[in-house]
Image 1 (cartoon, rainbow over the protein chains, first blue to last red):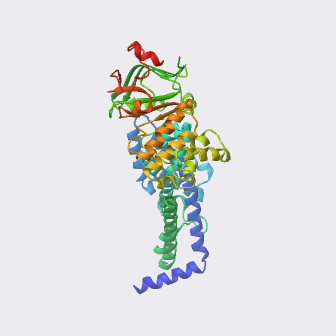
Image 2: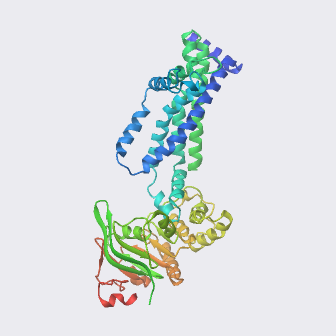
Image 3: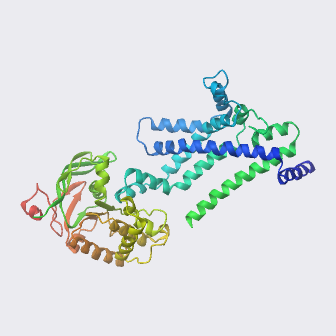
Length: 231
Length: 239
């Protein structure tokens, strides 16, 4: 127990002293996570809405496929993207491997099905009177759709946050595509994996505390936003 | 001679896999109050949905103000700006009462400022003066229905459709609705409302349209119905 308490004390010391390596990993994590969530939202939210509202053949199969993508192993995504962007791959000439951009590509692929599925659930769970009410008040189909999105906006925000949760805690893609390069592509999770295996438990713990704090902050934000909406 | 607002010919609509509405001929004249009377499942709501250009019939022809309806999306949007349907259990959008009442105006491109006076006037008409800043989701059931009516009135459409507006309302709200609908009809608005109540049409001096199992019924009601071109000559007296 003393070991953990002592490590925790050292971890807090690293955080409070603004340790450059710790905060570099935090910054890289936030950077790649935020960009990948932005891209995943740009794709995932419309896909979720289209699947929820659309009438097309094989809709059930598309839903099952989207659900299956949510459980996609991160190392498989890392492997596939690696194949495309490695020197021998079709996109190798872009020189993306072991850069933050490579991590963003992998994380976007991971987060998109999460955002799409949760958006789909939010839209399907919306009150079915919303669209006819908007339409009969003279709104166009597009205006009615925006009103529907407005009504379920917290569900959509939750889908984006779920996507963020998926990528901020991810390690496989960041390791395979980023290469865990110090002060460049090292993220919180890859740093924890490396430092802990090197015996730097306090360092890993410091990053773990920050990772937990980020997750907590995001959830508090969502809860407060939802509560203020209900009030 | 009254001008036809709606003319329906061989209109059929499916409700799920069953035939919800099967109307041979129906003319609804412009202006005045019309009551669709029928039991639960008689097709009143389905027919109102068609008249509101929300539900496309699976078969048949309909014209509005003498112009055939093609059910093209753009055309329907334009037509829906001339007709409003007040649902039986209206949905309140999140936000304030003012935001709800001004929704139709904003959809039509009104500015917030120009919508304000219409919102105020509409709320006054339904007896909810000063409710502008109230949260719409926190209103009681009766207040929500009045706000929904104000929201529909604010659109200033030619036609107002109401699905069972008298169901589950208190006496005061029913009285307010009756007098409001009478004054709107007297002002030239075409109002079509549905009801279970056989006597409501007579009470309101409305033209009664009977529906039974989705079909127009010729059973004499308290007030002779609007137009059934294929029925007796007496029925055409209103056209």
